[in-house]
Image (cartoon, rainbow, N blue to C red):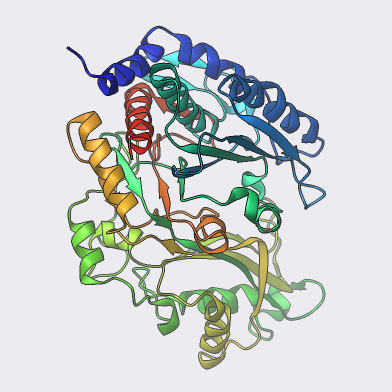
Length: 460
């Protein structure tokens, strides 16, 4: 005789196999919720109220939609289902906004605003980031309710609509609503698994600092034949300044940018993992990054410096002239153990020491997210790992943090919650690009994982 937990998990995968998951997700994908486009606030609000909100009402949630404290940003929803004061309260976070569609760049037969199933891929803008992922989680809640009649825990769901613009206003909102959002645990799903075949539990994220480096020496351009060798070239100065930050294999040379948190415990955790982006992902360059670290340690346990953009003159119409200025947008991804308040001052000291005091530093849009990491020995981590093992028959990969950045510190530091992220996508999903997609096997596993996890939390 099949037990109730297994029946619920079977019902969750049957929900996909019967085609109903695709029908429901297609409604979410067809709603254009591009926070990067001005004038989208009405569409963002309709996504929360008419689509997600109406579905959550059917599950017994009370819905409140609030204006964002940041006037230009989209609204924020809090859904609340209360069962009893003597049981845990789980907060679920998600975002309903997407990046722009890039309609004309998708493969023939595909559209960002139409869910398309092709083999094991589900195409559409927001499938991976983040509509498909939070719909898997909501579906898990629904399956538990259908099978048990209750969750067995109180549940709050926070869905914002400005994540793709840096979650403007979210920190202020959560501070204002701290009492309403008070919970025992945050569960969220965003970003990729370690690899497509490995269910993953993520305990935090790397932090993020974006900044502009620029050199401006004079006004106007000057003929390179008449002035070459007589006046300084800002592009050459900037190139040497940037190259002083790392060596020729990308190893960071600024002492304060080299973290102190790659402990034996974290090394042991990462030694069990093997990072992969799937069949169409780029090959990992073994001769790049910190020489003594494994690829997994470099991306999950260490800091990385990147150049996002370079500008001097007009590359499409270069002139025989020395430019007056040059600039670069740069980025540091950093782990716990790096002092975020010291990142820019340390860079300033380094550049001055190297003789580049004429290189200016300025923070840019989306200039900062904090690094976070939950203790791997936390009881909620153990529960999640045991639950996934029970649901799938094999253990999940435990990541101390993802390589990317998410506003997790709002929940871990501001709200004081243990945070667990269970992603339902993979690094080759083309999020933020044409042909964004989910993988069917990951979706079916995700439905099993979340149904099993919510069932087990309800048994506490």
